[in-house]
Length: 545
Image 1 (tube, rainbow, N blue to C red):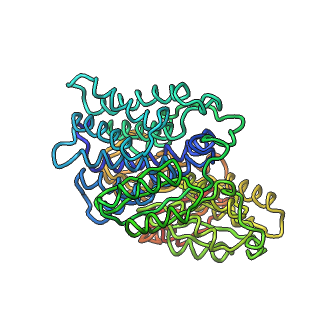
Image 2 (spheres, one colour; image 1 turned 135 degrees about the horizontal axis):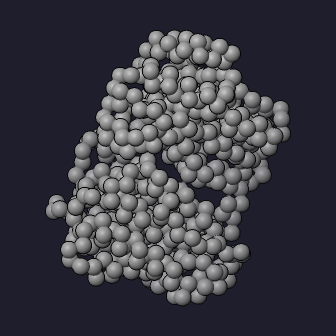
Image 3 (tube, rainbow, N blue to C red; image 1 turned 180 degrees about the vertical axis):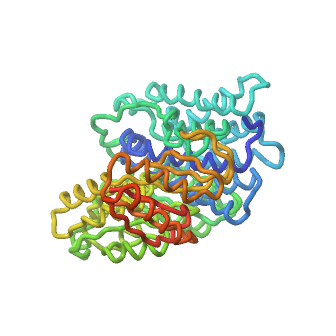
């Protein structure tokens, strides 16, 4: 296990946090009763961490091997830029506290202790009127617990201790905040922080974002959502609007801003520094809240939400402007695959092999289809969480969205083949889902380093054959054809009528000829089709229907 936190661990922390929050998003949304029961805390935390993750991925893309300091600062800055809601804004300040605490020195166990304390203190300082039984309490409990650990405790032990203490504190939040006790839930923001700290513990212990814990298997904390949300957590006559904006302002302008906003409403949180701030407040007069920002500096990215109408959908006349036609949106890599989808009538979202599309990009693709009813084909298992956020957002705008969680482009092509716009929407979704589910998928990849797999230990350069997402075959370096042939034999041993081969960018067409001949020789009744997909992530994708 590493003794210090490095930039790759920060990158893994982001990815694992995003996966854990994606899995828990709906659960956290459902338990959101404080400060306003608007059912969006899980979504807001997911979007906040998604922005942090994108910033870190961009840093790695531009600098290759950044320092842990720059990676943490990128994470905190991304969270600040993308912070949503009360809990998201507070989380961004917690991350900023961690980043500010870990400087040029070793990011070891002692540094993590100090960082968690500074993060908790920064969170309390950012909130105008801190309330116990919230995410602040959970952050403070984690910091207190690691401070009490023996000085010899290793980095992984400190991270694990923070996670465990946060979980204990989370369970106690209903005893500290009456509205949680009445609803029978723990604090939603605190629940999200537990997921993020669990991801940190996994990252420093060497857990890969692609491993079984990536979806939060060990980090799920079971809590039940309330049967019915209370009308308001801060009284029947709580403020009607949530106002959030980024603010370019000098430090000396902040005291007056805080004073003005505190007089306008509640749930005031101001986070940031170095001239850039994220301002969050609940008010009855959103215009006055924005004017306060103008007096302090330059507000931008202004978002105003009316609690009474949040999620109610678009006005009827706006929905009526959408096309009557049903649309299919397909996420694919490679121009060849994109062309196949377009020929079948789908709107295409190009995916970068090095970066998964964000929820905002998925939402934009759905809007671009300009239809009342949209079927979204993901063609990648890792997009389910982001797609869920995008679909919920579009449903709130009056668009009927069905997400078919295709895990491979061959499943997406199978679903497109049976798409029938003339059918009822539900019937079309069922038919497309059934076609996708009846298609087994596989792909080839090249191992980047030594690793344990379901098929044994692989070394750097080995050719990996993955069937339904798991490594099933390990071939020697350069043995692409023989490895693919073994994969095909294993898949066809369970039966099949049609084999689809999709060649990746730069893959020699001779490989397809070799595999077609192999299928004819070993399974003469099975048909084979070959497409030039152009995808960059895998030299070969295989489908068996």
